Length: 453
Image (tube, rainbow, N blue to C red; front, side, top):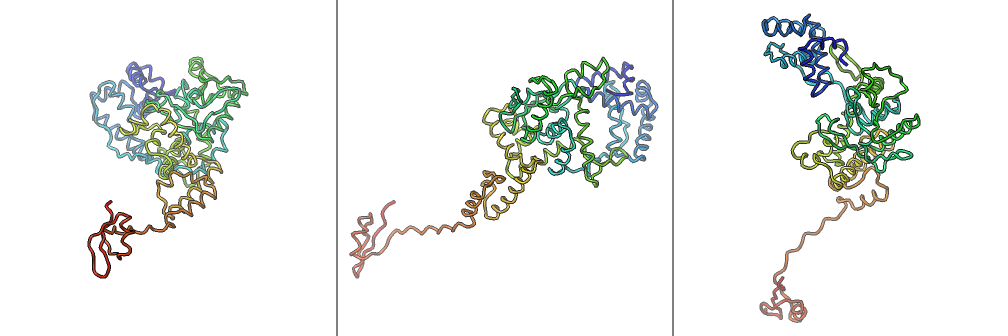
């Protein structure tokens, strides 16, 4: 899948390098090969000649690279874009133990091409979803509500992906159904970018879309099993495959590129006009498919700030390495107690993710209720124990009536009396309560001591 640069693999030096990179990641190997091939074309070099140049005349190679970088910058390319062109050549040199340090001095700014991109709102994401097919809606909601990367649903060469067996709450009976919501999603280590298995959850909105999608697949005659892809290649599209690639696609998975094809078009068509980003020297309007994962991260961050979900769990659901602290709790295999608490936390945060009208109204109600109760001096800890999005009027009225700001301040305790003066005729009553006589006074009065505590 490297296009016209596949011919470079006829060179033994290039093939040994490419095969070495492929051991870890075929995607990385192909990407480096493309970068290497483009640079050779621009410099009018071959794999052998550029190695010889680096060894025998590094100053000339340095000059060629600087001129090419200057030319690309004159074409309007960003430094971050230009620097990527040299990554393949750097890797090629490292593989063949060639020391070369004459790389052009650039100042790439991380994320410079995405400076204008922002995360869509739930309402904007809802407008994107209505443009998608049933399968496209499932893919978009998986990325936006569970935070999975496209490569989890379909791998680079369509040889693997998430399977129905990775959704333990899904039961494939006469009609597929989820026995519990939110439903558990177990991401295998082989599909995780960090190469560590992790657990996340699917929302009610995603569950409805996925069940409809599975029903459609079954009606088309597809037998569903635990080994079936969650997102499958559509056999009705009739994609012609070369014989050498047929085995690769026979498992029914999509390539990572195919996973994002449809949602890229929908995101592009619904993006605001003022949203633009630079790719090389071009200005391109629209959202990238990866913005859906950013949507999940951002909405869970808002839920975290509202006390709905703890930070370590939010990071774990996104498949991040949460550091040493998280490694000792959410970074381990989850037992039933932790799984139950994590499910409840995700449920509390679900309103922040949902694009449905009911969830949006619930979220608005929660914001208003929280603002009013904070004004009545309820603490964040007290509010975190309440489901503000579904408060009924009776419960809310009771909360207002018992608000801390309306409660009378308790009177300060009076200092304890150690002695007092009483009349002689009142003395018997005090003695019965444990008081004792201290001394007698004139005028028929007595000083008495308070009972011992």
